[in-house]
Amino acid sequence: MVKNPGAQTRSGAIKLLNQPEPVQVVTDPAGRPASVAVRTSLPARSRQGRSGTARISTMQTVAAIDDRWKINDEWWRGPNEEIERMYYSLLLESGNKVVVYQDMKTGAWFRQAAR
Image (tube, rainbow, N blue to C red; front, side):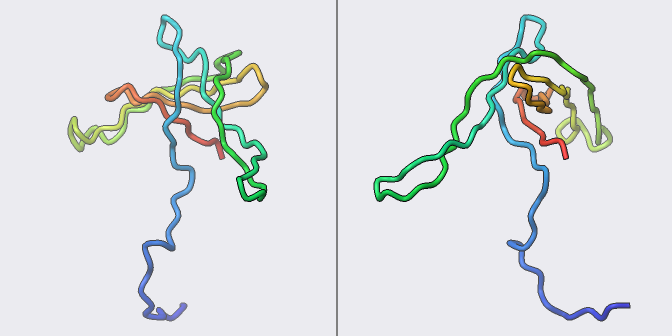
């Protein structure tokens, strides 16, 4: 058994992985994703002449919906804490695959990195 070193943990030391991020989604008349904003890194130069990267978002058309599923979880916590999401695994015309979901309570869309 490893001895507890007694050191305090720092809140900054914890990094949450695979956190969903808000994403812009345009839907078809049936409410399914038709296009999704995808962030792209491009080389950029600052005024001081230093190079770096700039991130821009471009809308990409959905070529196919590979899969979709609905999650209802934590319903026992009550209506304010219940999780209700519709997930879509999408193939974009660019060939990229993304997973997005819509929060069924707020209508907001999020991208969930598939890992």
